[in-house]
Image (cartoon, rainbow, N blue to C red; front, side):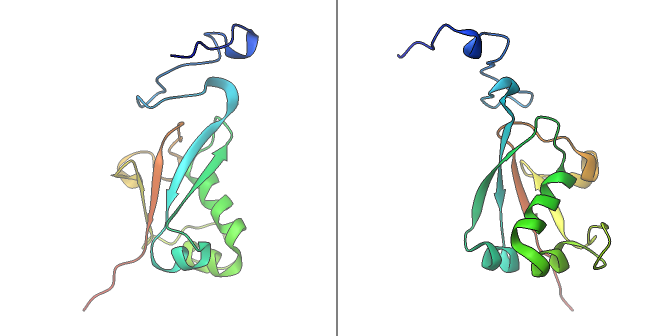
Length: 126
């Protein structure tokens, strides 16, 4: 076992082993969120998942905007209902640690260190 350095940066007020949802946390340094992609977004990103570092008070809506900005116009058309507007397409689902964001606080759901957000594509049928 390697001890943590004893300085202000690693003091107990800044380093918490369990975050708000019981995941390892890094206190005031921001948060890391894993995003899982499927179908179109997976193709745009060129990967199945990715880690984002966000501000401590980030919510799901902030993360969606970052993803849309990173992957351009095609990602925006996929995620947003109307081009040029900030209305998220209601057929796209967002799961935070396996829970539908609509059952939490929707787009305003605060993210915490260690969360996994899956962006689920629209499901068609007929």
